[in-house]
Each structure stands twice: as C-alpha cells, then as structure tokens.
Length: 176
Image 1 (cartoon, helix red, strand yellow):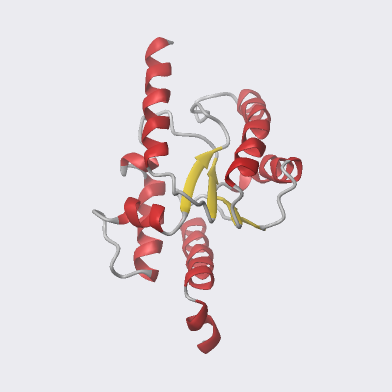
Image 2 (image 1 turned 30 degrees about the vertical axis):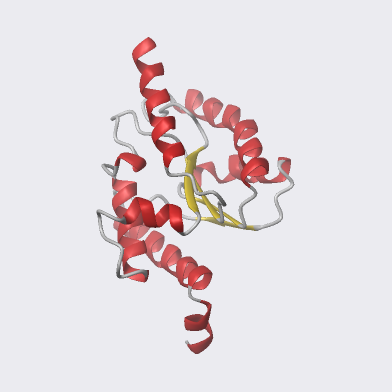
C-alpha cells in the first residue's frame, strides 16, 4: 500500500509541475493507468495521441517540447480518479468514478477553465455532474479515448484538432 501511495504522490508532483498559471483548457481523463505509464512522464498512448494532435496544429511542437508547450498554451490534464481503475471490477470502477466527482468539481472551481474536455466517453456522466456541481459555464466537450480502436482514434484526432484550431487560431477559422 505504501508503494502505491508514494507512486501516486510522485505522479501528482509531476502533474503539478506542468500546471499552467492560468488553465484555459482542462482535459479530464479517467485515471492514471495501472501499468505505471503516465501522460506527464511522456510514456503513454494518451500522451502520444495528444502530442500528435498538437504537433499537427502547431508544427514547432515535437516530443522534446510538447509538455512545456501544452502548459504554455494553458492546457492541463487531470484525472477523475486519483488511483488506477483499469484493473478494478466494473462495479468498483463505477464507484471510484462516482467518488471522483466531488474532487473534480473542486478542481473546476479552483482552476476555472474556459473549456473542459473529457478524453474518455465513459466518464461523461461523472464529468457532467461535476460540471453542474461546480456551476461551470464554459464549453464542455466529450472525446473518445484514442486507444485501441482506429475509429475512436480518428474521431479523437479530428475533434481535438478542430478544437485546437478554433481555440488557438481564430484567424484561420475565419478564412476557412
């Protein structure tokens, strides 16, 4: 138990290192994976999917600069659940997500982003309840997890690329 607690603390310290002074776009994942991979360690599939989308919109971004650029753009990724849930039973996983709603609502109030984007559709109902509890009035978007299904990754890339272009390239949107 102590080892898991230390790993969780180390993960959160690393996450906070990349928190922007002003969060404009808050991405919400379900939980860090049980494998130990982690977005902010730059070793997860979610990291690669995000990096590729951002690099397609911002050509100067590469693997060495992605996390710093992500932060500079006011983007931040948090998880609904503080601990991995991917090896839990369906019932335990749902309970963990329900418990995470209060914490996510507090995070929304504290960070006050303009946009909230979930990156796993299954947590949509939990995120919506957190958004309501926080009285969030910004834009809310749900994306599919860009994992093993090609059509989900394609939809994730298409939707996130559109959001990034809209959010960060308003002149390009007017011209197109």
